[in-house]
Image (cartoon, rainbow, N blue to C red; front, top):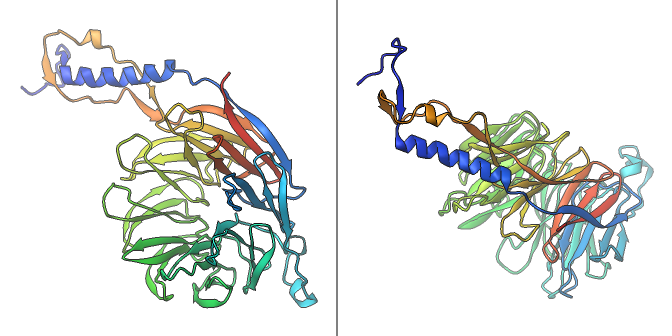
Length: 443
């Protein structure tokens, strides 16, 4: 029977299915409200680099002693390697002589600045790790695990993205791949010799990534808004154009738990883009600010699909489904310009989202969000009444929102974080030059 909207005496009867749906939402909300997460974030140690820092640290075991090191660079061009207690294992100063002509075109104070995280890998097949990083002067340095220079290479402009290490040809010769301010993407061999370079037509400040389907392809963004996919010979496979500079590193993953690979990358035009392996747009998602950092792909809700977590310069952290729908967002007080971390930092078997903000705070968020009730439906007023029957719920009783679990305040703008799995701690780099190690403690 049709419902007569003009008949004010009619009463609507909600079906048992609808009541069950509403009650499940309400139960979920109250469980979230009453289940308190215990503990706090506490600082284990801090380290003063005596220089500004521009990027996240890297955590890796570089010398094969089964203990992690913390590696990061500074604006003064010094690369630090710390042990897990903040002791200096070694450091390297990337100081180069610059002639007067070059100085006319350079920022003298930042000429040796290390703007991106270093990378670590065995690039020469000797069974030991090397540390690789680039500088504002356009130098690429390769150091051994004790901090001794193996080789260096001079590119034609500043290097502001992380250097990618990858065996591009499957010949056990790891290639050194990076973008440059001279509008080129470089590929060097393990001995520091140029293999080829690609002209992007615009400065390349993003960190390249690899899309490996059949054969590896290099994905990266450029200042002209283009996202490039090039093959191992340096030829363009496809190009996708956004509306502003692309600083972010691409993430590549199987979002839907099948054989399909997708590229996830943000742009300064405020959009997050998801492209298939042929460069076709699957969907995009608009924020209100530039997206400067890599997105994290992780299964947040155990549905065997990858959710997408990323920050924006609209001050928010977003979690999206692989279909482009928002799971939740959480607003901080300033830009979120670093990559999120999704890990279980309190050992309860559930993963948390960790993010650093320009507002000086590290936030630990519930990865599934929290269901917030806008109203509690008055079920007693509609049950067991005569009237018409419907399965339709005209309004959701609430929504899922980002939920903060813990927060830790640092001494400055947070430029990046890294996770140490050994003790489940978070290493936090701040712009003024302080590095903090933060850990969850049970109260």
